[in-house]
Length: 197
Image (tube, rainbow, N blue to C red; front, side, top):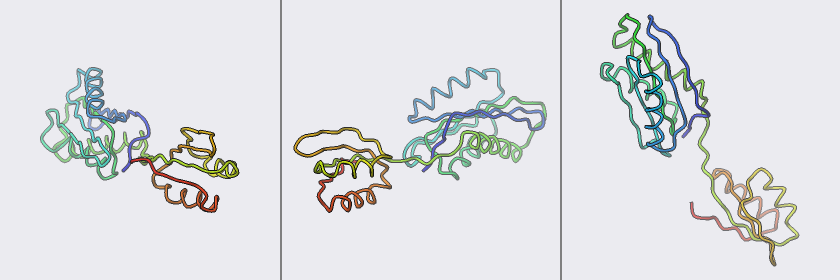
């Protein structure tokens, strides 16, 4: 799954209707709803403020509203843009100021989909990285080798007793290769335990 890299806003005109798409990262449904309130207050005079979010590791919590637009012409087409890109943990509001020219159902679908695509491009897509903690215990003679191997990761804790103990945070997708390298570096003279995921 992916998420968005940053908050963003775009706006554009179609047949005199102005569309403004605002997006923010959101980790919870409450964060998404608070963002909706903020944007709706900012554009309280708008004709429509359609809202959508997807929350959770697999995008299990999802929502969209058409906010008065014909059913299926606004929220769902916009949400589909994010689903096709496997994007979760975001909240988006697409605001419309009606310009006097009707767009028709197909035109609305294209307009809201386009707004979603443009704001997603502006926010940027970044992969969600799952992290795992590992506990290491090893002899002092391996300290430089191990610290050099782990220089790109966050060392949460160090304890210097009879042996050296470390807690290291690393991306889950690099776990197995890192463990194998640490075993190889120390000739299997290292104790490695993975903390609960």
